[in-house]
Every structure is written in C-alpha cells, then in structure tokens.
Amino acid sequence: MSSARMARAAALLLVLCAAGPAAASRSPSALWGLAGYGSAGRSLLQDQASCCALVDATATGGTMTCGPSGLVMTVPSVQFAPIAASISVTGKSGNTAALTTTALYGQTCSSRFGAATWGSAGSATTLAVAAGSDTTCTTGTEGTCQGLVNELGPVTNSAIAGRHSCTIRAGDGAVLCSGNNQFGQLGTGTATASTSLVAALVPGSGSGALTGATKIAVGGRPEGSAASGHTCACLSSGEAVCWGMNTFGQVAAAIPTTTTRVARAAYVVTNAAGSTRLAGCKSVAANLNHTMFLTSTGDIYGAGRNGYSELGLGTAAVTNYAAQVPRSSVNGLAAIAISAGKRHTCAVFEDNTIACVGGNGNGQLGRGFASGTASADWGFVSGINDAVDVQCGELSTCVLRKGGKVSCWGLGIAVGNGGATATTPFETLSGGAVSIASGDQHVCALMDDITVQCWCVGWELGGMGLAAGLVGVRLQAALTCVVLGAIAAAASPS
Image (cartoon, rainbow, N blue to C red; front, side, top):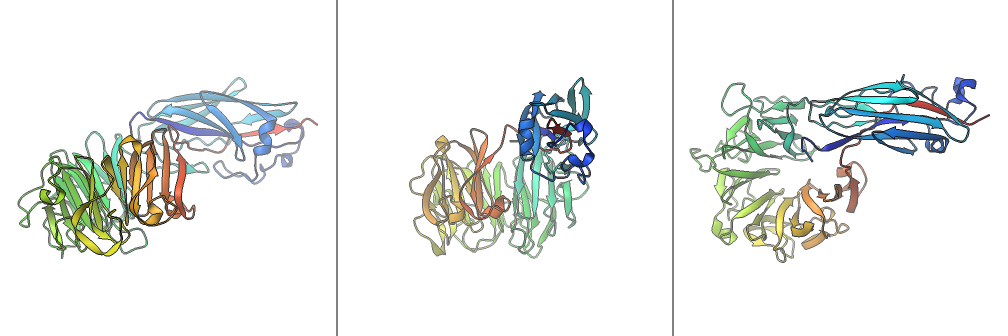
C-alpha cells in the first residue's frame, strides 16, 4: 500500500442544509446549526440525513454520498498529481439551495496533495488541488489535518512497535524514526524523543544519515509497560545494523549487556569477538528482547534474550551477537521467512513448511498442546506444507498460505476463532489474503479486493471492544479524508 503512484482519494465537500422557508426570506435562526457552528473543521450540530431528499447534487470529477454528516464529495486521484473537480447543488421539488465557499476548509488531509483552492464557475463550485510532494499520508478527523513529516521520496518499508516506529525511504534507503527514545531506539545518538520523523545516523561518529537500508524491524514492549525499544535494518551491502535497548544483547553487535543503551547504529556481528559482520542480510525480525536475521543463503541467526530458547540455538543462554542456528536443527532446510514473537520464533522453509521454537504457554508453537515448559528444539507444524509467510504475535502465530489462506494458532483472541486458545492451526481465512501483519494481540490481512480483515483485541483497533472474530475494514483504492466546511441551505417552499 505504499506505491508512489497508488490511487488516493480525498472527500472534500460537505453540505449543511435545513428545511424551512426560502433562504433569501428567512431569518438566520432558521438555518439549523449555523448559529454556533463556528469555524470550519468542527463537527455539525445535527443529523443532516433529512436534508438529502431536499437537494440534488452533481459532481464532476468525483462521486457524491449523503447521510447524517451531510453531502460528501469523494475525489479519486493519484498522489503527486493535481486534482480538478466541481459540484453543483440545487433544490429539489420546489426547495431552494445556495452554496457558499466562505467557510470551506482550504486543505486536504494528506500532504501527498497540495493546498485546495475553492472557486466558482457559473452555478458550480469548483475545487482545484495542487500536486503535492510529501509522500506521508496523514489523516485528519473533523477536518483537522495533521502533518507529521516532510519526506523526499516514497516509503517502501515500515515497522511499528509499542513506543516507536521506523520507515525506510525509497531512493536512498534512509531510516526515519519517531517516538520514544529512552534507549536510543531512534538512532540519533541521543535519548531525546521525537514526534516527527528523524534520520538514524551512520555507525561510528559524525552527523551523516544512515542510508542503504532494505528491510527494517523494531521491537519493544507495548505502551504502559516498562520502557524498551530497539531497531534493526538490513543494508544493501548485505550487512545489518541495530541500535537501541541492549539489556539482553538484542542489538547483536557483541556490545556487553551492561551497555543497555546503544544510541546509534552498530554493525551486527556473528562472533563474540565482534570481528565478523553478518553477510547477506535478507530480512530481520524483532520483538520484545530478541532479534532474528535471515540471510540470502537461507540461514537463520539470533541474538538477545533466550530464556525460552527463542533464538533456536538449542540453549537458553543470552547471546549478544548474531549466532547461527544450525541447519541440522531444521532438517537441513533453507529458510525463506522469519518472525519473532514475545518468547518464540517461527520460520518458513524452502519446502513451504513452517517450524517454531521457544515458549509455548499458549500453544503458539502449533504442536497440539500448550505447556509452561519451553521447547529448545525446532518443531514443524503438522498440516502446513504451503506456507508463504509467517507473522508472530506476542503469544500467537499466523501463516499466510498459497491461495491466500491464513491459518493461526496460539492465544485465542489473536487466532480469529472466537477467542479460544488454539494449539493447532485454525483456518482463519479460506482465501483472498495477499499479506498479513501482526501486533501483540491482533492480526490484519490485506485482501485481494483491497479490503482488510482483522481479528484482535478490539482496543488494538481503536476501542471497538473485544472482537475475537473477523472485523472487516474497508480500504478503498485509497484513503478518504473528510474536510468539513462547505455550507449550503436547502429550504422548503413556503
């Protein structure tokens, strides 16, 4: 969903209307909601659905909908391209309607678009939106648009943890991060938090920005827990870098765990002496206190906390460098995907099977049972031989399968089966999934019809309450941003 030319949409017009005598002959108080409406961008004072039957609206270059919020024009567009549209509103069945541009909100909800300019052409109100240059789509509510960052190029890869997030900028592979920074997880060389994106610095010294990143991963506890957070990236050179919290060696740079804060990028190494850098980094996964690396040769490496044997090394020893998982422990197979849970790790292999290792208190290893005793041995999940990708939640696992199927197991609220803990694969989606992503206790799948299906703890989707089953979320070919402010009066004949 981050293509530089992806279609976007902006809902740009709302009509406020009221029944009564003709607008020209009645007092201002007859216009419901106008008194006290205040400035553009505030929510309306009444349900406008009754007005829909009183007006006819015609949009050029967009589509119209009418409901409790009034009349909204949605204009599909292409980011970085200008938009031209217009709307005409007339009274129906003897009603009159007048449109004014005096209160129109002059911005769109994404800096992918430039400023909106309202005008008129005959009886129509026109809209012109200049081409934008910023690729960060920022949403707004009730017409208030929040600009979060100015960027130079399209985003290709992003990762979100409970307290910070990072993204890779296309073109130069710069790593841009924002959020909390107690352990230097933003990579700026300081412990100063940032509400806007800041560039991670190169390893060593100096003020140069890190570039050439190809994959990104972030780890850390959810908001409300003790402070934490670390970040890792694969580079175009095949090397990898990490920074942030190092309490358990999860930065994988052979830095002593007594150095708990690593505030700028350090090269990932594969030996305790720190003399050999990781080569061929293809992807990286991170969770609370451990980090997993996958190389172009299909080898798996792990670093960090290992109290549940989640590094897959056959031991429970903390490792402050990227230690290689013996190929013999995974039937000699090369891995093609890797993911890290809170206390477990899972990988997809070249024969499309999947194996997991580590904690199994909620059945997240998929072995048909749950146990407080961790497993130090990789175990292949029965019945899965068509895996494409894997995503581990805090205490659950989901796998994307050929044909767009998704199967999950572990903590029930993240399985999508109604809330019951599952120790073997449950088919959450029977097809249509294109990709999947997991939070701590929720999972979402992008579908081939450009919708999103999620199953979760409801508050992780914005306060919906417990929703352990499927929740449909519509992603139009583009984001829809609502801008309030166009005022029209529809009046009944006297």
